[in-house]
Image 1 (cartoon, rainbow, N blue to C red):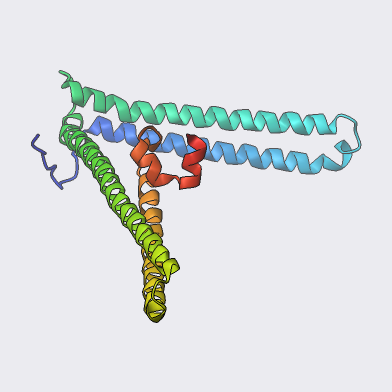
Image 2: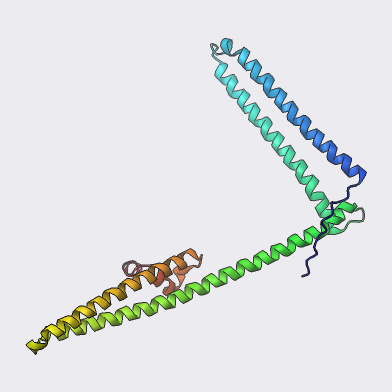
Length: 235
């Protein structure tokens, strides 16, 4: 889809459109001034009568009623302003989209911007889909790497067991020292291998858990995220 680059020139307003915008600005200023004057009068009235009314039994109820009226007035004003703003913004957009017969020049000028907005929305959606796919692929790769490290740790454990069995035999007293050295080296290698596996396990678990993938339905991904003890509880 070709994207139409809008011109940097300012939009040309007709005389009637300029009048409408000026009148709308004046109306907003008048509404704001009226609200300020009413608030000042209400504050002055409440301040002058506070000493006498505080002793009355209905003063708390009157204050509560005034607060409720104030909140209702604010809500009504906010809703009215929101409706007016929505009408002023959406009506020209709808006319520009549908290319109405009575479209004004400024409404026709909105069309390139609407096309750009729609194109940008489509592009953002594509990028989001691509990112999600990349995260899923990364999670799968991390799972495979973790599985390889797990197999490596298992093999190292088997080697350690064999070395321990050989050390226990002690057939030749002269080779005991050499056997102990080899056993210590195997233990060190096993410890390093296990530490690397734990690091890879934690990294892969964080990637899978934070990717948004439904890993609970995939046994391989569940094995990545959960610890072996947790896996035993889920079985």
